[in-house]
Amino acid sequence: MRHIEIADLIKSYRGRPAVAGIDLTVDAGEVFALLGPNGAGKTTTVEILEGHRHRDGGAVRVLGEDPATAGRRWRARIGIVLQTATDAAELSVRETVRHFAGYYPAPRDPDEVIAAVGLGDKADARLRTLSGGQRRRVDVALGIIGRPELVFLDEPTTGFDPEARRQFWTLIRSLAADGTTILLTTHYLDEAEALASRLAVIAAGRIVAEGTPATLGGRAQAQATVSWRDAGGFHEVRTDDPGAVVAQLPPGAAELSVTRPSLEDVYLSLIGAGA
Image 1: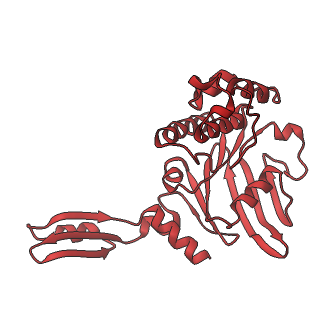
Image 2 (image 1 turned 45 degrees about the vertical axis):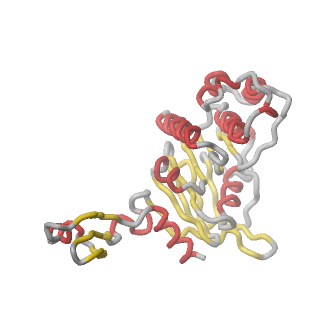
Image 3 (image 1 turned 180 degrees about the horizontal axis):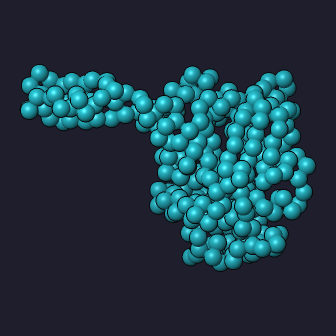
């Protein structure tokens, strides 16, 4: 079953294309990451999928319905974590989460959600007293309180410290394990590599590559770089068969290293070509 289907999606602002004919599918239970630089069309695409922005052309189905015409029952099936959110600063974390839980027909337990996002010890704290990263965790809690089938996460770990990011990753993996579909936009490539089963790179309003983190942009077939040091100095060779190169190295070779392009290397190459 596919939870997201996009065909030839088009959106322009004042005659300038922001999204220029995107085709994309996301299966049920999948963690899908959408990568791209600022201004590439990520946010516009996600807002169309959420039903917050009208498209100029193309076909879109999310959970089997067109977001442009879907009603309240459909909205109760999705969760949204925006880049920025407005909050009631004088309410406590628990009051805020409980309030939002009332909007949904079958919400999660508010205290369990608060604990899941790492705010158990801040449940009674006023939102105005929280740090930026802690407020971001509240945003995540509000995005998942309704037990959504599909969650949109737009730069969800902005402002998180490394420990909080790892805790968040654990939460996302647990949601995915329960069958929740997740569409993630992020500038953190290690986050995309750690969480996503598939990803796509968007540049200048078009999808320029799609695949798994290991295969994106031909990464799995890319040449390896073998480097070493011996009596003659430092050496570096690019090769399709690093094993053969290593086997032929002289006995005195030291500082041996075999590397392939990282996801960041591939991503930077793709957005450069796409732009």
